[in-house]
Image (cartoon, rainbow, N blue to C red):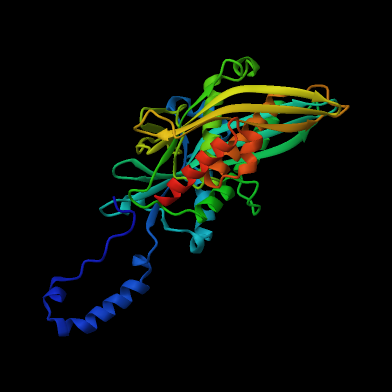
Length: 402
């Protein structure tokens, strides 16, 4: 598959002319080809709007705020988030790595690259203090680029954003959830507090991968016997694996610089990923095969109480191997801890929120070390220390040399 536009086909009479007669025309054609915006180096990408990953039957339940914001009606035939995202990208067209088009039906023939911002998670956590509540709203999404004819994924960009808020004890929790998620979806001038703004920022720094580029995938996230009892009953293990599979994939993309296939355990069967557009159209994308796969085993969590401070630690086993081989190239245990200050007014300490922070820390740092290993980090955070550092260094040299 080619990810750039094809060359112009010149008329037959032009090709029949003699070499000398062709020279002026060749110069003119070359100048026209270079300066024409239609045949510039940027590929054309067709805008497919905002969509929602997963079984179409559960989309409204899984993404209540986004689907409510992005509904189409006879009075409003254009979905609000679709319109806002397209306008935001169009305003930044000069800095985009491709030419954006909205007329997907007019793509003529040949490979057509389409793009959708696919929402994959809405979540809100609430922590209670003596005289207020802390609200943390989070949204995860994927910017998916795919071959519209073959419905095959070409590339993806993970996008994550969070928002903190404080409400009084008498405030409606349902309203707090809706208000904070809604705020994350609204486009603003601040690139740090809007899903659409963060996604557009990632897109501006993105380049469509060349054919034959190596692909990586988080194959599985498992919860060990020691860690499992510390996971709250309200948290389903499959949902937890999905969240951190997505999180690690995002870190490997942005910090590790790897071309990642989305983690799809919660919304894919085999190598097929399903979703639904704002207008109700259901789509299924075929995922490419991975060259290398990663596995994360969440081994344990640990809590150490100290005066005015608590330490929360997470331990994971990380394995990397070629997709077609059974022997591991990388295999060791890693840990990280976060400190949490305890206020005299805090009536409840949410251990799980702190464990999640520790798990995020070890995974994000691990992603960084895959790209640029540092000996001191392995001395402090890995079980086999120097041995694992040397293995990571060889891995980095091997991957960067391909």
